[in-house]
Image (cartoon, rainbow, N blue to C red):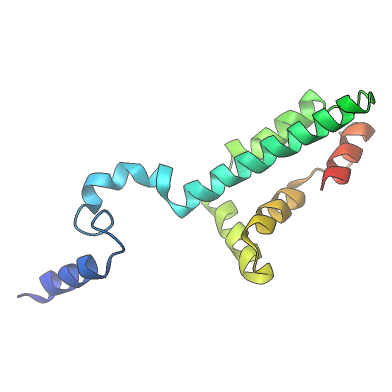
Length: 131
């Protein structure tokens, strides 16, 4: 057996499953959906949706009328829509430091919060209280 065939065979044998081993070329199109990057991206999406909902429902129940403005909602949604490989790497770095996967997503979103300039005071207050 040639060296390249041996290393390929070893790779296939050490894969977690046949899907990332011998069938890798057949499932390559699934990587954007089932990779660690995709997992983190969708966890960010869930956290953002939860954050928006909790702010709006909490303030609605208290009859405060301090729901997130469209600008703040767009900002939060942009964190998800513009999520990059660098963002995923940053989340993993936070996770390595604090040893908590869910909190690392929360910290990542918290780091992305806007400076006060350009945002209505109620939006900044709502975001800061929620964080």
